[in-house]
Image 1 (cartoon, rainbow, N blue to C red):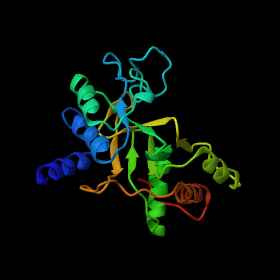
Image 2 (cartoon, rainbow, N blue to C red; image 1 turned 45 degrees about the vertical axis):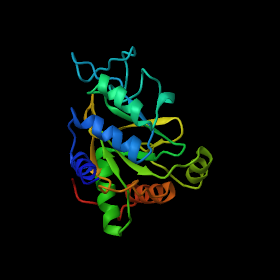
Image 3 (tube, helix red, strand yellow; image 1 turned 90 degrees about the vertical axis):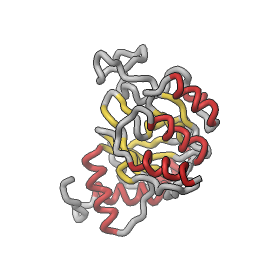
Amino acid sequence: MREILGRRRRLLSRRGGGGPDLIGAALTYAAHWQWPVLPGVAADPQGRSRCCCPDPECTVPGAHPFDPGLLAATADARMVRWWWGNRPAAPIILATGGLAPCAVSLPALPAARALAALDLKGIRLGPVVAAPTRWSVLVKPYSMEQLGELLYAKDFVPGSLRFHGEGGYLALPPSETGAGGVRWERAPLPGSSSPWLPDVEAVVDAVVDALTRKGVNAPEL
């Protein structure tokens, strides 16, 4: 057990990267945390900003499922070992929603400012995934009805916010995508049976407030 926990601490503390730790990370998400994952399509080695999928205009190169499709996502450790045994460099894709975490994402620079502002307010956040262009705050699973009611009650919601719920997906660390490496900005605590996640209401309220209020200005990061 000590060896397993030590391995988990190492893979969760990495800030990007790939290679051998991908299968270890995928097994932690699936087998220990019961998060359904699957391998993403790789970025084109001839041009990392391009994707190996058939879409020449792919907007998330290497950071989405293709073969297998999203419905194949699983928490079965045997399947995860087989996938990454055959595709050791494949990005790790989380199928969001259902019993799995959902996420709220926003562009990287506003996200850094928002997190700094939330820290000043003492608002607790769970894990935060940082890709080169966008950061994603993981939240408890929510339904589309719940999200719709939440957004309807808002006077204004920044158009830069995106929501990863049922039927959505998100690349997890330490994946390498066409846009670059994916890392933890706020890593889950090592050794936990499953990371703590905040409610989507708390995150949306706090992020919208941090992004729209003139009096909330976080330092440049």
